[in-house]
Image (cartoon, rainbow, N blue to C red; front, side):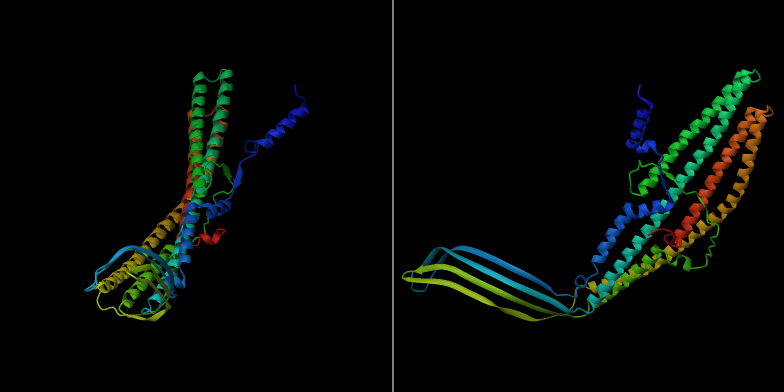
Length: 448
Protein backbone atom coordinates (compact mmCIF):
# COMPACT_ATOMS: atom_id res chain seq x y z
CA UNK A 1 0.00 0.00 0.00
CA UNK A 2 1.07 3.60 -0.55
CA UNK A 3 1.87 5.58 2.56
CA UNK A 4 -0.70 8.21 3.54
CA UNK A 5 1.56 11.13 2.59
CA UNK A 6 2.13 9.71 -0.90
CA UNK A 7 -1.60 9.16 -1.39
CA UNK A 8 -2.38 12.74 -0.39
CA UNK A 9 0.28 14.03 -2.79
CA UNK A 10 -1.16 12.00 -5.68
CA UNK A 11 -4.65 13.31 -4.96
CA UNK A 12 -3.34 16.89 -4.94
CA UNK A 13 -1.60 16.41 -8.31
CA UNK A 14 -4.77 14.89 -9.74
CA UNK A 15 -6.74 17.89 -8.52
CA UNK A 16 -4.33 20.24 -10.30
CA UNK A 17 -4.47 18.21 -13.51
CA UNK A 18 -8.30 18.10 -13.49
CA UNK A 19 -9.39 21.57 -12.40
CA UNK A 20 -12.80 21.25 -14.05
CA UNK A 21 -13.67 18.29 -11.86
CA UNK A 22 -11.77 19.23 -8.72
CA UNK A 23 -13.15 22.74 -8.37
CA UNK A 24 -16.58 24.26 -8.68
CA UNK A 25 -17.96 25.77 -11.88
CA UNK A 26 -17.12 29.33 -12.80
CA UNK A 27 -19.33 32.03 -11.38
CA UNK A 28 -20.85 34.24 -14.05
CA UNK A 29 -22.55 37.53 -13.25
CA UNK A 30 -24.93 39.33 -15.57
CA UNK A 31 -22.46 42.18 -16.11
CA UNK A 32 -19.73 39.71 -17.03
CA UNK A 33 -22.08 37.96 -19.45
CA UNK A 34 -22.99 41.27 -21.11
CA UNK A 35 -19.31 42.24 -21.36
CA UNK A 36 -18.47 38.92 -23.04
CA UNK A 37 -21.43 39.32 -25.38
CA UNK A 38 -20.41 42.84 -26.40
CA UNK A 39 -16.97 41.52 -27.33
CA UNK A 40 -17.81 38.18 -28.95
CA UNK A 41 -21.45 38.14 -30.08
CA UNK A 42 -21.48 37.49 -33.82
CA UNK A 43 -24.37 39.84 -34.63
CA UNK A 44 -22.56 42.73 -32.93
CA UNK A 45 -19.26 41.92 -34.62
CA UNK A 46 -20.90 41.75 -38.05
CA UNK A 47 -22.70 45.07 -37.42
CA UNK A 48 -19.36 46.63 -36.40
CA UNK A 49 -17.77 45.53 -39.68
CA UNK A 50 -20.66 46.96 -41.70
CA UNK A 51 -20.33 50.17 -39.70
CA UNK A 52 -16.63 50.33 -40.62
CA UNK A 53 -17.52 50.05 -44.31
CA UNK A 54 -20.01 52.91 -44.03
CA UNK A 55 -17.40 55.04 -42.26
CA UNK A 56 -14.78 54.27 -44.92
CA UNK A 57 -17.19 55.46 -47.63
CA UNK A 58 -17.41 58.99 -46.22
CA UNK A 59 -14.60 60.60 -48.25
CA UNK A 60 -14.32 63.58 -50.56
CA UNK A 61 -13.13 61.32 -53.34
CA UNK A 62 -16.15 59.03 -53.04
CA UNK A 63 -18.42 62.09 -53.15
CA UNK A 64 -16.79 63.33 -56.39
CA UNK A 65 -14.86 66.36 -55.11
CA UNK A 66 -11.39 65.18 -56.12
CA UNK A 67 -9.98 64.81 -59.64
CA UNK A 68 -9.18 61.47 -61.23
CA UNK A 69 -5.90 60.66 -62.95
CA UNK A 70 -5.17 57.64 -65.13
CA UNK A 71 -1.90 56.47 -66.61
CA UNK A 72 -1.98 54.52 -69.87
CA UNK A 73 0.74 52.83 -71.89
CA UNK A 74 0.51 50.61 -74.96
CA UNK A 75 2.85 48.95 -77.45
CA UNK A 76 1.45 47.76 -80.80
CA UNK A 77 3.20 45.62 -83.42
CA UNK A 78 2.14 45.09 -87.04
CA UNK A 79 3.43 42.93 -89.85
CA UNK A 80 1.95 43.83 -93.28
CA UNK A 81 2.43 43.02 -96.93
CA UNK A 82 2.30 46.34 -98.82
CA UNK A 83 1.46 46.88 -102.49
CA UNK A 84 1.44 50.42 -103.91
CA UNK A 85 0.18 51.06 -107.44
CA UNK A 86 1.45 54.27 -109.04
CA UNK A 87 0.10 55.72 -112.29
CA UNK A 88 2.18 54.82 -115.37
CA UNK A 89 4.59 52.89 -113.15
CA UNK A 90 4.79 49.27 -112.18
CA UNK A 91 3.46 48.43 -108.71
CA UNK A 92 5.79 48.43 -105.74
CA UNK A 93 5.41 45.54 -103.33
CA UNK A 94 6.94 45.04 -99.90
CA UNK A 95 6.39 41.84 -97.99
CA UNK A 96 6.79 41.60 -94.20
CA UNK A 97 6.85 45.31 -93.42
CA UNK A 98 7.03 45.64 -89.63
CA UNK A 99 5.85 48.59 -87.58
CA UNK A 100 5.77 49.18 -83.83
CA UNK A 101 3.96 52.01 -82.09
CA UNK A 102 4.49 53.12 -78.48
CA UNK A 103 1.89 55.28 -76.69
CA UNK A 104 2.12 56.60 -73.12
CA UNK A 105 -0.09 59.23 -71.52
CA UNK A 106 -1.39 60.62 -68.24
CA UNK A 107 -5.05 61.73 -68.25
CA UNK A 108 -6.58 64.11 -65.73
CA UNK A 109 -10.31 64.79 -65.28
CA UNK A 110 -11.78 67.09 -62.68
CA UNK A 111 -15.43 68.01 -62.31
CA UNK A 112 -15.58 71.52 -60.87
CA UNK A 113 -19.37 71.94 -61.03
CA UNK A 114 -22.08 69.30 -61.26
CA UNK A 115 -25.11 71.14 -60.00
CA UNK A 116 -24.13 70.59 -56.35
CA UNK A 117 -24.41 66.81 -56.59
CA UNK A 118 -21.02 66.23 -54.97
CA UNK A 119 -22.07 68.20 -51.87
CA UNK A 120 -25.37 66.33 -51.73
CA UNK A 121 -23.57 62.98 -52.12
CA UNK A 122 -21.18 63.81 -49.27
CA UNK A 123 -24.10 64.61 -46.98
CA UNK A 124 -25.78 61.41 -48.14
CA UNK A 125 -22.69 59.36 -47.27
CA UNK A 126 -22.63 60.92 -43.82
CA UNK A 127 -26.29 60.01 -43.37
CA UNK A 128 -25.53 56.42 -44.41
CA UNK A 129 -22.76 56.31 -41.82
CA UNK A 130 -25.17 57.57 -39.17
CA UNK A 131 -27.72 54.97 -40.24
CA UNK A 132 -25.06 52.27 -39.84
CA UNK A 133 -24.19 53.48 -36.35
CA UNK A 134 -27.86 53.44 -35.36
CA UNK A 135 -28.19 49.90 -36.74
CA UNK A 136 -25.18 48.85 -34.65
CA UNK A 137 -26.67 50.52 -31.59
CA UNK A 138 -29.98 48.73 -32.14
CA UNK A 139 -28.14 45.42 -32.56
CA UNK A 140 -26.24 46.01 -29.32
CA UNK A 141 -29.40 46.93 -27.40
CA UNK A 142 -31.29 43.90 -28.71
CA UNK A 143 -28.36 41.64 -27.92
CA UNK A 144 -28.01 43.01 -24.39
CA UNK A 145 -31.73 42.44 -23.85
CA UNK A 146 -31.45 38.89 -25.23
CA UNK A 147 -28.43 38.17 -23.01
CA UNK A 148 -30.29 39.51 -19.99
CA UNK A 149 -33.33 37.35 -20.72
CA UNK A 150 -31.16 34.29 -21.40
CA UNK A 151 -29.16 34.85 -18.20
CA UNK A 152 -32.27 35.12 -16.06
CA UNK A 153 -33.65 32.07 -17.86
CA UNK A 154 -30.64 30.17 -16.52
CA UNK A 155 -31.34 31.57 -13.04
CA UNK A 156 -34.98 30.58 -13.43
CA UNK A 157 -34.21 26.99 -14.37
CA UNK A 158 -31.56 26.70 -11.64
CA UNK A 159 -34.06 27.91 -9.02
CA UNK A 160 -36.56 25.34 -10.22
CA UNK A 161 -33.94 22.64 -9.70
CA UNK A 162 -33.48 23.90 -6.15
CA UNK A 163 -37.25 23.70 -5.61
CA UNK A 164 -37.35 20.12 -6.91
CA UNK A 165 -34.39 19.18 -4.72
CA UNK A 166 -36.27 20.51 -1.69
CA UNK A 167 -39.25 18.40 -2.72
CA UNK A 168 -36.99 15.37 -3.11
CA UNK A 169 -35.64 15.94 0.40
CA UNK A 170 -39.18 15.78 1.77
CA UNK A 171 -39.91 12.66 -0.30
CA UNK A 172 -36.75 11.06 1.03
CA UNK A 173 -37.78 11.79 4.60
CA UNK A 174 -41.16 10.28 3.84
CA UNK A 175 -39.54 7.10 2.47
CA UNK A 176 -37.35 6.81 5.57
CA UNK A 177 -40.25 7.40 7.95
CA UNK A 178 -42.45 4.92 6.09
CA UNK A 179 -39.69 2.35 6.23
CA UNK A 180 -39.29 2.84 9.97
CA UNK A 181 -43.03 2.58 10.48
CA UNK A 182 -43.09 -0.62 8.42
CA UNK A 183 -40.21 -2.05 10.42
CA UNK A 184 -42.13 -1.58 13.68
CA UNK A 185 -45.31 -2.91 12.10
CA UNK A 186 -47.43 0.23 12.08
CA UNK A 187 -47.39 0.81 8.29
CA UNK A 188 -48.26 -1.56 5.46
CA UNK A 189 -45.92 -2.46 2.60
CA UNK A 190 -48.06 -0.49 0.15
CA UNK A 191 -47.14 2.78 1.90
CA UNK A 192 -43.45 2.11 1.29
CA UNK A 193 -44.13 1.42 -2.35
CA UNK A 194 -46.27 4.55 -2.72
CA UNK A 195 -43.57 6.67 -1.07
CA UNK A 196 -40.92 5.16 -3.32
CA UNK A 197 -43.03 5.83 -6.44
CA UNK A 198 -43.48 9.49 -5.44
CA UNK A 199 -39.76 9.76 -4.70
CA UNK A 200 -38.88 8.35 -8.14
CA UNK A 201 -41.35 10.75 -9.78
CA UNK A 202 -39.57 13.67 -8.13
CA UNK A 203 -36.21 12.33 -9.33
CA UNK A 204 -37.65 12.10 -12.85
CA UNK A 205 -38.78 15.73 -12.63
CA UNK A 206 -35.25 16.64 -11.52
CA UNK A 207 -33.69 14.97 -14.55
CA UNK A 208 -36.03 16.80 -16.89
CA UNK A 209 -35.32 20.09 -15.15
CA UNK A 210 -31.57 19.50 -15.40
CA UNK A 211 -32.00 19.14 -19.15
CA UNK A 212 -33.89 22.46 -19.25
CA UNK A 213 -31.04 24.08 -17.33
CA UNK A 214 -28.43 22.71 -19.73
CA UNK A 215 -30.39 24.00 -22.71
CA UNK A 216 -30.71 27.43 -21.09
CA UNK A 217 -26.94 27.54 -20.58
CA UNK A 218 -26.35 26.52 -24.19
CA UNK A 219 -28.65 29.35 -25.37
CA UNK A 220 -26.74 31.88 -23.28
CA UNK A 221 -23.35 30.61 -24.44
CA UNK A 222 -24.53 30.93 -28.04
CA UNK A 223 -25.43 34.58 -27.48
CA UNK A 224 -22.03 35.11 -25.87
CA UNK A 225 -20.32 33.66 -28.95
CA UNK A 226 -18.48 30.97 -27.04
CA UNK A 227 -18.35 27.18 -26.72
CA UNK A 228 -21.88 25.93 -25.95
CA UNK A 229 -20.44 23.28 -23.61
CA UNK A 230 -18.92 25.80 -21.20
CA UNK A 231 -20.47 25.22 -17.80
CA UNK A 232 -21.06 27.98 -15.28
CA UNK A 233 -23.15 28.96 -12.30
CA UNK A 234 -25.17 32.22 -12.39
CA UNK A 235 -24.01 34.50 -9.61
CA UNK A 236 -26.95 36.92 -9.69
CA UNK A 237 -30.53 36.41 -8.61
CA UNK A 238 -33.65 37.84 -10.23
CA UNK A 239 -34.28 41.22 -8.63
CA UNK A 240 -37.14 43.18 -10.17
CA UNK A 241 -37.04 46.98 -10.31
CA UNK A 242 -40.46 47.95 -8.96
CA UNK A 243 -40.02 51.71 -9.50
CA UNK A 244 -40.68 51.97 -13.26
CA UNK A 245 -43.44 54.39 -14.12
CA UNK A 246 -44.25 54.69 -17.81
CA UNK A 247 -46.38 57.53 -19.11
CA UNK A 248 -47.55 56.33 -22.48
CA UNK A 249 -48.38 59.86 -23.62
CA UNK A 250 -44.71 60.83 -23.25
CA UNK A 251 -43.42 60.68 -26.84
CA UNK A 252 -39.85 61.27 -25.65
CA UNK A 253 -39.87 57.83 -24.06
CA UNK A 254 -39.34 56.13 -27.42
CA UNK A 255 -37.75 59.04 -29.30
CA UNK A 256 -34.29 57.69 -28.48
CA UNK A 257 -35.07 54.27 -29.88
CA UNK A 258 -32.40 53.60 -32.56
CA UNK A 259 -34.84 51.81 -34.88
CA UNK A 260 -37.06 54.89 -34.95
CA UNK A 261 -34.11 57.23 -35.40
CA UNK A 262 -32.78 55.07 -38.23
CA UNK A 263 -36.03 55.44 -40.19
CA UNK A 264 -35.76 59.20 -39.75
CA UNK A 265 -32.25 59.07 -41.20
CA UNK A 266 -33.55 57.00 -44.12
CA UNK A 267 -36.04 59.79 -44.79
CA UNK A 268 -33.14 62.25 -44.87
CA UNK A 269 -31.36 59.99 -47.36
CA UNK A 270 -34.48 59.97 -49.54
CA UNK A 271 -34.47 63.80 -49.49
CA UNK A 272 -30.82 63.79 -50.62
CA UNK A 273 -31.77 61.42 -53.46
CA UNK A 274 -34.48 63.87 -54.54
CA UNK A 275 -32.02 66.77 -54.55
CA UNK A 276 -29.52 64.70 -56.56
CA UNK A 277 -32.18 63.86 -59.13
CA UNK A 278 -33.10 67.52 -59.52
CA UNK A 279 -29.43 68.49 -59.82
CA UNK A 280 -29.11 66.31 -62.93
CA UNK A 281 -30.96 69.04 -64.87
CA UNK A 282 -28.03 71.45 -64.37
CA UNK A 283 -24.94 71.59 -66.61
CA UNK A 284 -21.67 69.92 -65.65
CA UNK A 285 -18.36 71.75 -66.03
CA UNK A 286 -15.10 69.86 -65.92
CA UNK A 287 -11.42 70.29 -66.63
CA UNK A 288 -9.55 67.76 -68.74
CA UNK A 289 -5.88 67.48 -69.51
CA UNK A 290 -3.29 64.96 -70.60
CA UNK A 291 0.40 64.57 -71.18
CA UNK A 292 1.24 62.10 -73.93
CA UNK A 293 4.10 60.42 -75.70
CA UNK A 294 3.71 58.71 -79.10
CA UNK A 295 6.41 57.05 -81.15
CA UNK A 296 5.92 55.09 -84.40
CA UNK A 297 8.74 53.20 -86.05
CA UNK A 298 8.54 51.33 -89.40
CA UNK A 299 11.19 48.99 -90.76
CA UNK A 300 13.22 50.22 -93.81
CA UNK A 301 11.40 49.82 -97.09
CA UNK A 302 13.27 49.38 -100.40
CA UNK A 303 11.60 50.59 -103.60
CA UNK A 304 13.99 49.82 -106.41
CA UNK A 305 17.09 51.89 -105.66
CA UNK A 306 15.35 53.93 -102.92
CA UNK A 307 15.51 53.09 -99.24
CA UNK A 308 12.96 54.74 -96.94
CA UNK A 309 12.13 54.62 -93.27
CA UNK A 310 9.16 55.96 -91.38
CA UNK A 311 9.62 57.27 -87.82
CA UNK A 312 7.43 59.76 -86.04
CA UNK A 313 7.39 61.03 -82.44
CA UNK A 314 4.97 63.28 -80.55
CA UNK A 315 5.36 64.57 -76.97
CA UNK A 316 3.20 67.26 -75.42
CA UNK A 317 0.28 68.51 -73.36
CA UNK A 318 -3.41 68.56 -74.10
CA UNK A 319 -5.90 70.44 -71.92
CA UNK A 320 -9.29 72.05 -72.07
CA UNK A 321 -12.66 72.73 -70.49
CA UNK A 322 -15.62 70.39 -70.91
CA UNK A 323 -19.19 71.63 -70.68
CA UNK A 324 -22.02 69.12 -70.64
CA UNK A 325 -25.61 70.29 -70.81
CA UNK A 326 -28.41 67.70 -70.42
CA UNK A 327 -30.99 68.23 -73.13
CA UNK A 328 -33.10 65.09 -73.18
CA UNK A 329 -32.62 61.65 -71.62
CA UNK A 330 -35.95 59.97 -72.14
CA UNK A 331 -37.68 61.65 -69.15
CA UNK A 332 -35.51 59.61 -66.77
CA UNK A 333 -34.84 62.62 -64.54
CA UNK A 334 -38.57 63.17 -64.08
CA UNK A 335 -38.95 59.49 -63.24
CA UNK A 336 -36.17 59.65 -60.64
CA UNK A 337 -37.67 62.78 -59.07
CA UNK A 338 -41.09 61.14 -58.81
CA UNK A 339 -39.63 57.98 -57.30
CA UNK A 340 -37.67 60.01 -54.77
CA UNK A 341 -40.82 61.84 -53.70
CA UNK A 342 -42.62 58.52 -53.31
CA UNK A 343 -39.71 57.21 -51.22
CA UNK A 344 -39.96 60.25 -48.94
CA UNK A 345 -43.66 59.60 -48.44
CA UNK A 346 -42.95 55.91 -47.83
CA UNK A 347 -40.32 56.60 -45.19
CA UNK A 348 -42.69 59.07 -43.52
CA UNK A 349 -45.33 56.35 -43.31
CA UNK A 350 -42.69 53.85 -42.12
CA UNK A 351 -41.69 56.29 -39.36
CA UNK A 352 -45.29 56.61 -38.22
CA UNK A 353 -45.74 52.84 -38.40
CA UNK A 354 -42.60 52.19 -36.35
CA UNK A 355 -43.64 54.81 -33.82
CA UNK A 356 -47.04 53.17 -33.48
CA UNK A 357 -45.44 49.74 -33.15
CA UNK A 358 -43.05 50.89 -30.42
CA UNK A 359 -45.85 52.61 -28.51
CA UNK A 360 -47.95 49.44 -28.73
CA UNK A 361 -45.09 47.21 -27.59
CA UNK A 362 -44.33 49.61 -24.76
CA UNK A 363 -47.98 49.58 -23.69
CA UNK A 364 -48.02 45.77 -23.71
CA UNK A 365 -44.73 45.53 -21.83
CA UNK A 366 -45.85 48.02 -19.18
CA UNK A 367 -49.21 46.29 -18.79
CA UNK A 368 -47.41 42.97 -18.27
CA UNK A 369 -44.95 44.64 -15.90
CA UNK A 370 -47.72 46.09 -13.69
CA UNK A 371 -49.66 42.82 -13.76
CA UNK A 372 -46.59 40.75 -12.85
CA UNK A 373 -45.75 43.04 -9.95
CA UNK A 374 -49.22 42.45 -8.51
CA UNK A 375 -48.92 38.71 -9.10
CA UNK A 376 -45.42 38.74 -7.60
CA UNK A 377 -46.69 40.23 -4.37
CA UNK A 378 -49.52 37.67 -4.26
CA UNK A 379 -47.28 34.71 -5.04
CA UNK A 380 -44.69 35.72 -2.44
CA UNK A 381 -47.42 35.59 0.20
CA UNK A 382 -48.78 32.36 -1.24
CA UNK A 383 -45.32 30.81 -1.16
CA UNK A 384 -44.95 31.51 2.55
CA UNK A 385 -48.31 29.88 3.20
CA UNK A 386 -47.43 26.85 1.08
CA UNK A 387 -44.12 26.37 2.94
CA UNK A 388 -45.81 26.59 6.31
CA UNK A 389 -48.48 24.15 5.18
CA UNK A 390 -45.85 21.66 3.94
CA UNK A 391 -43.89 21.90 7.20
CA UNK A 392 -47.01 21.32 9.28
CA UNK A 393 -48.10 18.45 7.03
CA UNK A 394 -44.70 16.76 7.35
CA UNK A 395 -44.78 17.05 11.13
CA UNK A 396 -48.34 15.73 11.29
CA UNK A 397 -47.35 12.82 9.03
CA UNK A 398 -44.45 12.07 11.33
CA UNK A 399 -46.89 11.93 14.24
CA UNK A 400 -49.27 9.73 12.28
CA UNK A 401 -51.99 12.37 12.09
CA UNK A 402 -51.90 12.77 8.32
CA UNK A 403 -52.14 10.33 5.43
CA UNK A 404 -49.48 9.93 2.76
CA UNK A 405 -51.83 11.29 0.13
CA UNK A 406 -52.44 14.47 2.13
CA UNK A 407 -48.70 14.91 2.70
CA UNK A 408 -48.05 14.45 -1.00
CA UNK A 409 -50.66 17.05 -1.87
CA UNK A 410 -49.12 19.55 0.54
CA UNK A 411 -45.70 18.80 -0.91
CA UNK A 412 -46.90 19.29 -4.49
CA UNK A 413 -48.70 22.50 -3.55
CA UNK A 414 -45.44 23.88 -2.19
CA UNK A 415 -43.56 22.92 -5.36
CA UNK A 416 -46.24 24.40 -7.61
CA UNK A 417 -46.30 27.63 -5.56
CA UNK A 418 -42.52 27.92 -5.69
CA UNK A 419 -42.37 27.32 -9.45
CA UNK A 420 -45.16 29.81 -10.00
CA UNK A 421 -43.28 32.42 -7.97
CA UNK A 422 -40.09 31.76 -9.96
CA UNK A 423 -41.98 32.13 -13.26
CA UNK A 424 -43.72 35.34 -12.19
CA UNK A 425 -40.46 36.89 -11.02
CA UNK A 426 -38.80 36.01 -14.35
CA UNK A 427 -41.72 37.38 -16.37
CA UNK A 428 -41.68 40.62 -14.36
CA UNK A 429 -37.93 40.99 -15.02
CA UNK A 430 -38.45 40.25 -18.73
CA UNK A 431 -41.12 42.97 -18.92
CA UNK A 432 -38.78 45.39 -17.13
CA UNK A 433 -35.99 44.59 -19.61
CA UNK A 434 -38.35 45.09 -22.55
CA UNK A 435 -39.45 48.51 -21.27
CA UNK A 436 -35.84 49.61 -20.93
CA UNK A 437 -34.98 48.27 -24.38
CA UNK A 438 -37.85 50.10 -26.05
CA UNK A 439 -36.94 53.35 -24.30
CA UNK A 440 -33.24 52.84 -25.18
CA UNK A 441 -32.17 53.04 -21.54
CA UNK A 442 -30.79 49.51 -21.29
CA UNK A 443 -27.27 50.41 -22.41
CA UNK A 444 -26.98 53.04 -19.70
CA UNK A 445 -26.94 50.23 -17.15
CA UNK A 446 -24.55 48.00 -19.10
CA UNK A 447 -20.78 48.17 -19.54
CA UNK A 448 -19.69 49.49 -22.93
